Image 1 (tube, helix red, strand yellow):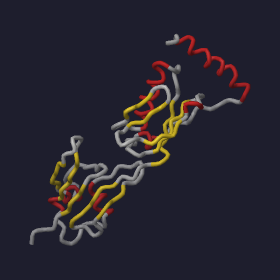
Image 2: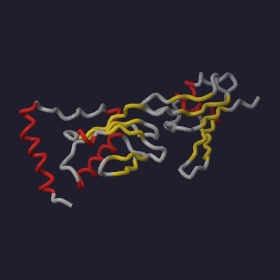
Image 3: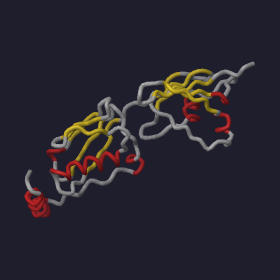
Image 4: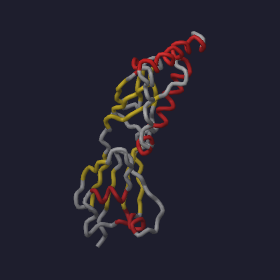
Length: 201
């Protein structure tokens, strides 16, 4: 492995030449809300390394939450936000290949994230997450047309598949949430199923 001082030489040369050839401005940091977005499989992302055009890549995240980049290979982005992914990539390039690289990661295309809302709602079926945003249980029911006249919001069932592939059920009192009697948010995840039962008459 070459020494770090030898690797620094090309960057010193670039630094001397850049004022003559037209100053290049470092990429602006992404908007705050975008950096908090948790990356998902099938997202199309662009990875830009400042002053390293040969390393520019547009890649789609695999179903295993990985991407492959030049020199540093396969990277696991499971559960990582845009900001966290930038830092991981920066540290990997900085470790062996580049000196203090500036990394900019942009989501070019968001994968469609949906949950199923079924039972006593006016428009049962798939509900799509807004891009870059989180969605709570109450909003999902609202996007499914709202609860029907005979809905029992005190016994809403949320079904979620865990990392081991096992379905887990939770009974939630959405009526309390709507009345402001609960501080729980119950943010939904891709693939969740929300079942709103009917009241027992």
